[in-house]
Length: 254
Ligand code: PGA
Image 1 (cartoon, protein in one colour):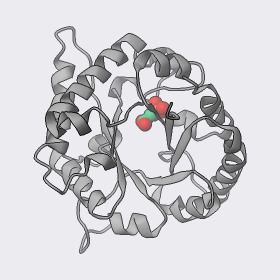
Image 2 (tube, protein in one colour):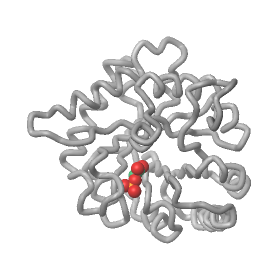
Image 3 (cartoon, helix red, strand yellow):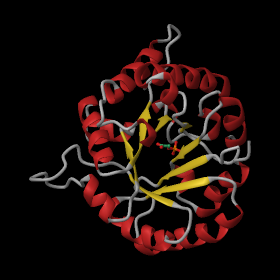
């Protein structure tokens, strides 16, 4: 069976190179016995430090976002090529905090995926509704996000280089009790898989790994992984502390 995939989204929780380096070196040692594949997503400023510290290990490094532009006059942006040069081989795209804080549109998300793929980066595409409603409107929100990000991709969207992270916005940054209910997660995963099959064709669509993110910690990871039928997690707050993160990795056994 494939190992679960756990992506650590450090957001702005880890700030200094020395903290990032200490974390990465410690993770490298502990990973020898871990049963999960790990991707660390530090802020852009910490990418070179983390890439260097994890060199020679199975840990992969991701950007937390990227520019929709490939190059040129875009002050403050970081392009796919720049991420790659800083050591990233993966990138998170469409995180709800980027959609909220930086007003990243559906079009921008799509352009970011294309740009990432042109540079050879693996994309973790985040989708998620801001609220659930009894009539099920949240399903159409997810379907809309998937279609606008991935439909009519031609050669620019590479299905093999996509991982989808279902991150309901209402569950992000809370505590384990407020994470999605495992049965609801399972239902959403089936829905996402069906949509991916419709958009990208059955043979590739059903193989795309689906992660869950939103208040995951060691106390709910095992159940969510088992009951939710997911490939792993995108973890925020609990990923920024080496002890809570390695505890998640430890319980990540199917
Ligand atoms: P959280 O964040 O684990 O702190 O809820 C998850 C995410 O936003 O990726």
